[in-house]
Image (cartoon, rainbow, N blue to C red):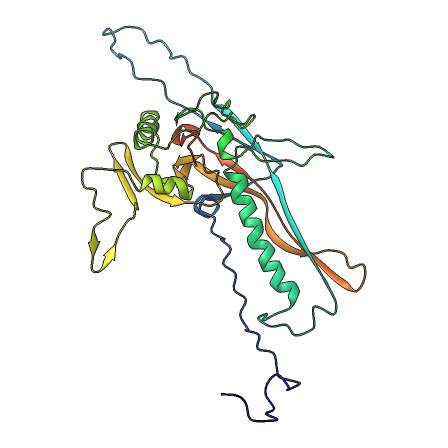
Amino acid sequence: MAQPTNTFDTYDTVGIREDLSNVIYNVSPDETPLLSGIAKVTATSTLHEWQTDTLRSSAVNAHVEGGDTTADAMSPTERLQNSTQIFKNAVVTSGTNDVVKAAARSNSEMSYNIVKVGQEQKLDMEAALMANQARVAGNATTARRLAGLGSWLKTNVTNIGTGGSNPTGNGTNARTDGTQTVFSQADFDLCMQSIWSEGGKPDTVILSAPQMNRALGFVGNNNQRANGTGGKVENLLSVYLTPWGSVTFQPARENRSRDVFIIEKDKLALAALRPMKNEALAKTGDSEMRQVVGECTLVVRNEKALGLIADCTA
């Protein structure tokens, strides 16, 4: 029905208060499974170093009674290194903007944005840790870069595509990507076997969403993930048991879709030269600037305990 004549409605009213929710909805992903899951250690220089060692292969060990003893030939340890990378973000707000009352902020605009860039910086760190990125020593005009996980793995790598090749394995060069092919259970099992043969005890698989979907198709002696119970349909791959060990699958958004990493968390660490912190910068006018800065690097304690199914089709 039509309005009565001269009805004064909301379209005529001046001064209706705005209806602005006091919540800010942010659904951007902020999980960092690799960064959050590995050990944290301390670095004391921009070039962080560590050592690895291996045992010789088994041999026939039988000796003549009363015979002389000859010393074994011993191999030296291997000295490895990685450069620390500086991660930095800054926020500047005007003096006025920091005191006006804004919706959905319990504190100032500066405080809100510092928390936000801190979360973004963690995503940058996660991406760098899993990158196929060689170490860069840096200089006065070139930023240092840490060698990402992709540039370390050479021993236990399967599904290398045509034209692809493994890196040297010490972070000095990136791996060469090859032609992509489908991620398969056979390649995964072969990689697990290779890690076991080298002495590794893998516990976690880090992979992208497309490769997680492939893994959901893995079959086994008791493959019941799709069975519904209690009105639920279950299609999960939480633990995968093999003769070479059991691993949990962890989808990660920041790794390259083509890379499926099998890791032993104890054989990786984050070495922090400067733990992430929030600090004020010099005030030059009617504004405030703060930065969130951290400096760290990736420690690959022994790449033989890790594996990669490479060049997987997205």
